[in-house]
Length: 419
Picture 1: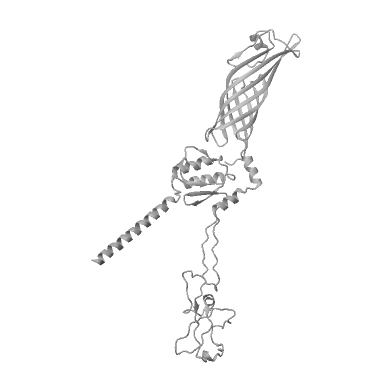
Picture 2 (picture 1 turned 90 degrees about the vertical axis):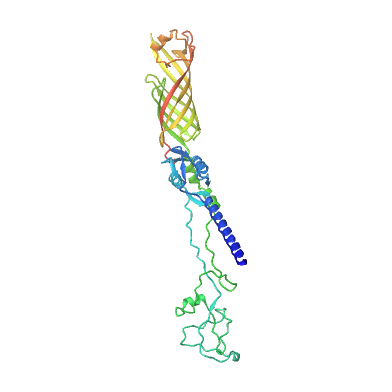
């Protein structure tokens, strides 16, 4: 009866140990990163920080990255909208050249490949000694006579000052021989004649104070140290990063009053200058101004453009030279959509404010003609409609306001930017 109770107690303890081990294994498995986990990315181009946040939300993976080396706003091109975490890490590497290392439930993004794992080699040092075969009987130890070396023996006598390890074992009773100096495991390995007396050590034995200390394997540098080194970017790298964030675009557009508008935009991501040559093939002029952009998502942004420019046209009648000069100020609310790696479309409404002034022989003067005759004599800008027009034949100056529309196709010319 007592034996049965003890057996039941042992069985319960074994079951508890197995259950505890299963819980530990399960908990550790949950913390590991599953690179085969599928992630859905609802865009073909997405910023690096948005992509990492998306993986974190769908898979619970945490990331560590040096944002000085890899800008968080860098766009990542996605070939397939549904990929594994491993596939997305390869997409990130193809776009930025970044490497990664896995630590528990963290993925650390590095600018250099992680060091290869080295096999730890334990240098076994032992104070175990191997007794050499005993020589024939010699005088008693009490006589303290030196033992002459045996010339036929393959074991060389080692002076005490070169090998202090001397066995304290005594020979069996009846054999009054003097033991030779002990041979260490390292010395035994050097002599190939010892086969049965050589000790094969399979587990590391702690070294004593008299033995040589084992060399510790070279440990891998922690990820924090690697990130600190990566953050110390050289000045050429910083210059390339700044150049990669520059905005340089060229495009061709049209609007309700000008049908040919070659345009250049240059600056940084959020503020830029623009210049264009506007023409309706009858009257032309140079325009310039400033623009600003706000990102809505990975493919759309909203821009505000403010421009100004001068236009003029002349007419000779009865030996008198007439000229009108125009200042055209415009404010455009533009939406930009990316349709390729470097191609985008810009479109939106434009508010126009035109100030018109007439001159005769260089002197400001009222034209003295109604607007329909002015349109025949001069190449005026003719909007489809106007919100306000105070033109008068008896006034030298007038102002028109209207809202138009513009459309343009642009190409990104910043080839230093990584795709």
